[in-house]
Structures are given as structure tokens and as C-alpha cells.
Length: 283
Image 1 (cartoon, rainbow, N blue to C red):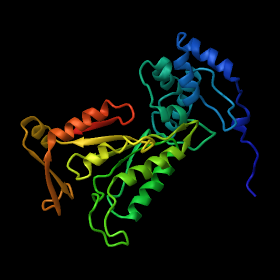
Image 2: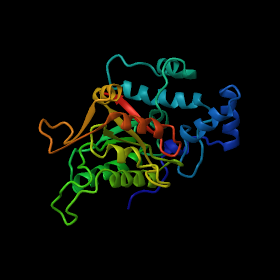
Image 3: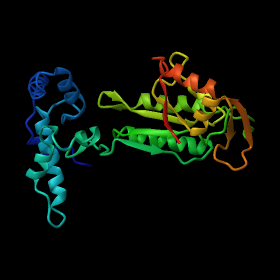
């Protein structure tokens, strides 16, 4: 049977009460209790029972420096722990992202040291969709944020060979991924998910409106990948072509639409606090 004995490096760590940590961290941040609370909840070293092992970000920086120095010792001309610490101290020169701050030198959990991951196989099949869903939850339970592009999924109404006969389009799978995100807890907070689609995808308007229905796609941020063609067509009033596959030289489906309508829908829904669709960039 596996040993249930607590590792020595865990036993030797002094723990602190939450009020003590909050007081010390607030003083560290010059009286900013909000900053102290965010640090305490998200980045301070703690175990699954809620015991806290760091009082201020200075303790966190010492932890990170010690672990990085341990790795440095495996290579020629290693950087010293003190030099690493001086680069981190008081967030002066190097400010690690959230996952590195929480995960480096953390003996209490298996956590990703990268903040964000883009996943997906571009497989327009249930197998590919489920694989992405599994990768999503595996990454999120390790504290990673995830981005998934849905442009490769067939638009609503497209013929398929299964019992449904036609595709349901992108929106139901937005809900699937969002629900998975809501189900995965990350130290008291849920996972972070961004879903994107090309502005040329035939489902783009349904994608933009997906969050208008109360309670739908609540576990994801959504963003349209806008290209120069949409902006130019919106400016000049010329028709804009939706197509699928989006990047195909000879797409199986095309449709001309008013680019201004799509652009106005993006702007309107970006201002809607329930929906919050955005543009992820012009390509």
C-alpha cells in the first residue's frame, strides 16, 4: 500500500492563521487589503486543508528563488538563489504570471507552470470534440487556462452521415466546453476558457449571440477572430462572404452578408454585460 506519511519537507513548514497572513500581506501592499486578499487566495502557498505557509509575497519570492536555484545547480555557471530572489523581490524586475507564482516550489499540488494553453485537433467529429473536452478539464484541474477555436466545426444545417442527418453547428459545443469549465474548481475559483470563431464562419452571428440567453455559455469568454475583409466591407458597404471550410480554396458553402450588421452586433454585444463578446484581433 502507498505510504500516507506526510513528507518531511511539508512537516517542517510553519503555518499561519488567515487573519495573520491578511494583516501581514496588507502591510506589504501598503495598506491595500484587496491586493492582499487576491494574493492570499490565489498565490500564497497552502495545502488542501487550507493551512497557509506564507505570510507575504516576500515568502513566495523566496520559495520561487529556492526552486529555480535548485534547477540552476544542474547546469554550468548556475545563477545563485540570492540573485534570483533580488530579481523577484517587491515585484521590481520580474513579475511571474499567476500559475508560476502559485506552482513553483509548491509541494502540495500538481499545478501547471504555464498560464494558458490553446488546444484542439481541428477534427470535425464527436471524437475530436470529446478529446478537446478531456484535454480542457485535465489542463484546468492543474490550474491552466484554455483557448479553443471552433472555426473548424461544420455550421448549423450542414449534412452529416450520423442519425441526426444535419449538424447542430458551433453553439451547442460552446455550451459543452463552458459547462466543463464551470465544473472544474481551481483552488476556490473556476477555470478560464476562451472560445473563438472566424468572422467568416457561417455560424458567426449565432456565435456572437450565444450568451444573450440567460444562463447560457456562462463558463467562457467568447471572441470573434475578425479579418481585414470584414472591416473593409463594413467601411465600404460591400458584401462580405461567409464560407465553409473557412480557409478552403473551393469552399462547399458560401453566403454573402452585410458586414456592417456583423460588426454592429459585435459592438452591441460587447457592451452587454451579460454577453461580452469581443474581437480577438484583425488578421
